[in-house]
Length: 327
Image (cartoon, rainbow, N blue to C red; front, side, top):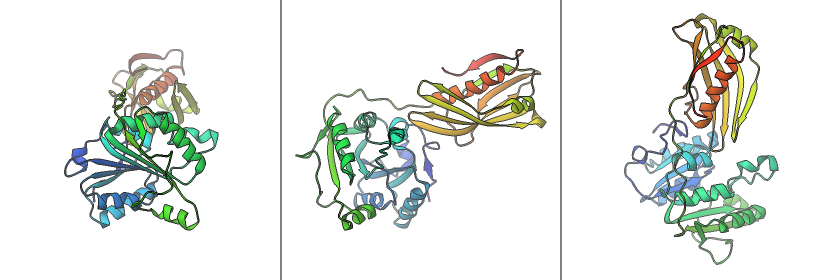
């Protein structure tokens, strides 16, 4: 079975040649649930490559088992948020079809940033579609259908391929387990069919990795003393949120690691940042580790800087010697 894929262990952008035996039109399902629709796409469209995006580990396991069961070489699920895939994995004009089935509405105001259908995502979807490419969306919630109509119809790169804002049925459509259950319970879906039009777009480029961040500093305090002073700290730099949660000392090597959660608009990472001694007494290097398959994003640069700045603030004799971080 091919290795399990997630947004932290694949290349940015995706290397399609390493994922599929040959280059074919690309279909992408966002939020594939139990994988039935994804598998059906791959089985009925052998002339296409199919990528599924999903944030549920349980759904990933189900889809991977079904793909292996049918021996499908043209289907690969990736554990990722849609926003992360659109910003870091899928290049402009690389996708022939997006399929979005019954996305979570996230109606509570505090959860609205997690909602898939919003202006920023619609613009990214349009920019990733090839000319004439298709965006299909299904929902069984009227309020979400109204939101989708408002959002997609306002996107300059998309044109409604239906005569009405939405359809209540699409002949020949494969019904997933969730959709079939909704019909049995008397809930009809709202279907959207949009095409990438000829309106020129400023395609947002793939957000690639930066160089590896690190910071050199001097402190008269050893690592154990620094960890003894540590308290959870949170910082915000524009739309980057950093939480330094815990610190752990390794007195034998005068070293420490700091547990960090970094939230950026397109990606979230949970990793460790290390403090290690250099050859000169009292000198240390702060750098990211590979824990959690960490990637050097702008937020990771800010997190490494945050650890170094916190260490330097713990003693008046401490100072940052050199910064290899951005921002």
